[in-house]
Length: 115
Image 1: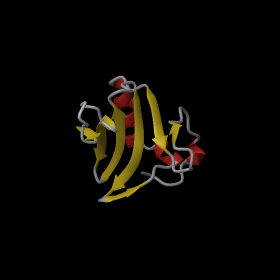
Image 2: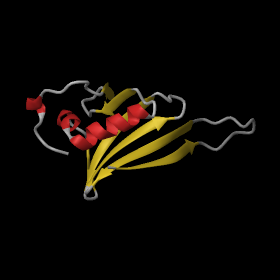
Image 3: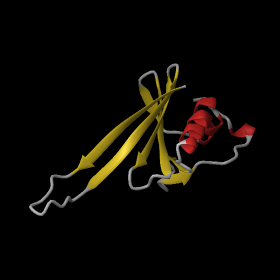
């Protein structure tokens, strides 16, 4: 697995007092194995959290599914994030509730499509 981390700042222009309307500082993590990449984000002001965003395969992205959490690449990405202190992991499920906690156990029958 290859791990790439890039740092980003998304902010409005500061006003006269140096204040921002919005300011987001975060790292994007890309975990790659062959043509498959899993993408996660961690905000600077939440150092113990990371959020899985999507899976990319050969230049195309798709939302993550429950089944992805059985894939070795996703399991390795979770282990890497936890090893660097990101102990609160969630994922963008697309079910309308925003982020959900990463499942701690997944039933083998839940695997419907590999990453």
